Image 1 (tube, protein in one colour):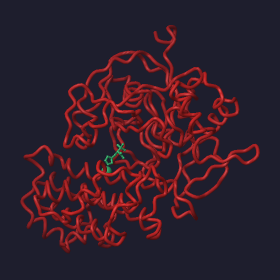
Image 2 (image 1 turned 90 degrees about the vertical axis):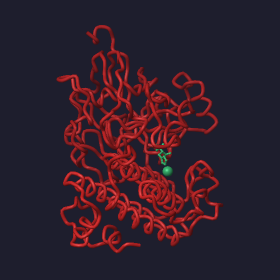
Image 3 (image 1 turned 90 degrees about the horizontal axis):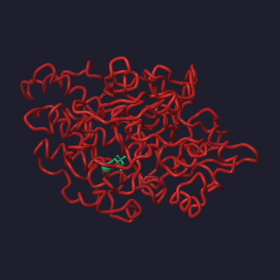
Image 4 (image 1 turned 135 degrees about the vertical axis):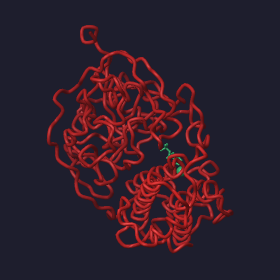
Length: 474
Ligand code: AVJ
Ligand code: FE
């Protein structure tokens, strides 16, 4: 335990700082740790701030409920929250304490318990897990060591540490589990414990309902985003035919029309497997919707409220998304189409990092980072629109795509096969764009997510697309 580490984690005013407020103790470590250049220190400051932000969120999500709630299984689809918490610490220990830091294990005896591949989520409550108090102590002890490693370890010489990658990977891992924990909160029964201001109102709806994305090559993926994960690499040219994409995700009101039109009772709109699933699982509406006479309500983190008509629909599975799209005479976009809609700049032909440009997401661009506990209405983020006028590609809801999970040509697993490679060619569909529960650090227009096509507990919705008609494509 280093007092210095404690100052990062718990010192006054340290949350979410960008580094301008480093204390005297930090300055001492700066000389003690090694002779790093100015850019190197800026990177370390950025890493520290991101580690702190992620931990603040994990603590808030786990402190919001009592020990019984932390250890209970809220759904067989999810781990108990206390498993996620200790798993976050264990991954951090494996990569940053042991590998990058070359230090002794903090707890060598629990690796197996927190290895996601050893125990399916449904079995985790019956494991001899760390108690909430033990898990909190464990993640704190790991973090103290990591902040010390961050002050001393070289950030060059090994690909794992170049540009702080291993730290960025662990920050993203924690934020991904925070989104998973947020989904567990949505499944939890009982009085609401999470609170946040409502999302912003619509200010300017998209100018048109759909736009043409012209045919032509597009460079998909990235080689240069330093914290991009292995499945986003390498960049490669794809040819994308002209297509037309909706400028907004499908809304609750739009989805309710599909239900009212008997969409759940008409196998014409569903794929064969989709229909079989619809029957077997008795799907009749999105998860967390409730019928109240002739109006719709929803249960959102324990608050039952009228369904907001203009928010993107959320908690539908791939099969429901696909059926809705077929009912409208359209289809879901493919993954290259989605990425081209999100990144292609028709002026320069270049691919941007984000629809709005290369800057990191700000609160004006997208509904990310659990600032709100729901998607925002269509038209709430005109500043985040793409050059072609496509809105809300980033944030609000993950968008189901009609693509399976494969590695890009030239894919190399890095630094471990179990992040992506072992899922290639499985029963997964791609999701893009991030949700209101996705942190900006884990949200890029190249970021790839995937899940089973029947899953509905994630914050997933969709938008529609179609082939361009010949007269449109010219
Ligand atoms: C990329 C969201 C599918 O949650 O299963 C967390 C992220 N990988 N720990 C998941 C992940 C390892 C992953 N997804
Ligand atoms: Fe994990």
